[in-house]
Each structure stands twice: as C-alpha cells, then as structure tokens.
Amino acid sequence: MKKENKEKIMKKIREAENTDNYETSYDERGIPTSKKKSNIKKGKLSKAQGSRFELKVRGELESKEWILDKWNNNIDLEENKLVKAKRKYNPFKKILIIGTGFPDFIAFKKINKKNYDIIGVEVKMNGILSKIEKEKCAWYLRNKIFSQIWIAKKGEKRGTIEYDDFLEKYGKKYNKI
Image 1 (cartoon, rainbow, N blue to C red):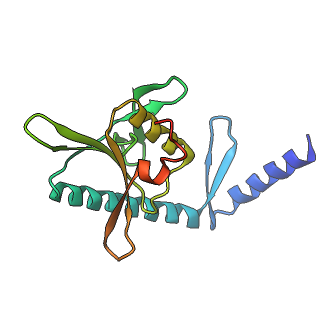
Image 2: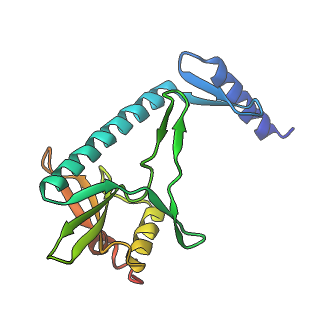
Image 3: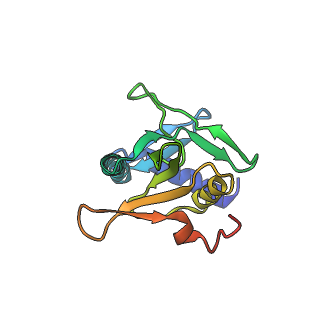
C-alpha cells in the first residue's frame, strides 16, 4: 500500500472515531465518510435560508402579476436536450423532493390578448451562477425555451430583491446566443 493512501485511510478512521466533532456514514463497501458536525449545521441553515428566500421571490413576482410554477426540467448538455429533472428521495424524512429543475421557476405574464412573455427565474442569494448554470441558461435562450432568464438575488438594501437579466450580465461571454 502506498504511503499517501495509508495516510488517507488512517485520517478517515480517526475522523470516524471522533464522534464529538464528526458524523460518519459508510458506503456499500464499508468505507467511512465523515463530515464535520459544524458544517452539517451550516448546510442545514443555508438550505433553510435559501428556501425562505425562494418563497419571498415567488411572492414578489406573483404580486407583480407574474404567474409562477416550479420548473421540473433540466438540460443534459452532453446530449443537448431537455430532460426531466431527477427526483430526490430523502430517506430520513421519507419524502420525495420534486423541485430540482433548473432554473427554479417558469414565469409568464400576459402581454396582450394573444401573447405571453415567458421567462425563467433562477434564485441565487448572491446572484452568482456556476459555469454549468451559465451554459444551461445560454442553451435555454439559444433554443428559445425562454425569452429571458432572470437571476434573483438579495438587494443592497435589507429585505429587497434585485433581478439580473442573464444576457445583460453574461451576454458578452455567451454571445453565441
């Protein structure tokens, strides 16, 4: 066994033994994976905060007469096609999580008697998209799935929400759209 592999394994074993600071789970091969309890708590708090912010964004857009729904699709960039978002099952809470599509919402608003404006809304508290998320946004716009994609983020002033248009923010880099 190589020395660096032995050190990694010994580190995992030490973390698994330290139940005060680490929570350990084992995969199907019996290999321990430990997570710091403080990081687990931060993750739970961040997820809850993000969910509350998503609800706030939804409420604000609905008050501006947009009709919103969760977007349950995603993009397979390798196959270059729209696919159903994967559903996640939480065995601890015994629930199926459905809303895992990208972007978070589809929103539409009546423009005139026959036409609607259809946009995608991605909620990010800091307003920053990952590289893959940017590629997915560009794909949606290129394939005319949405007329615009908005990125909802926390505003400068406490309690406010700001919206960035994807093309205005990232259009130069993704000018193939």
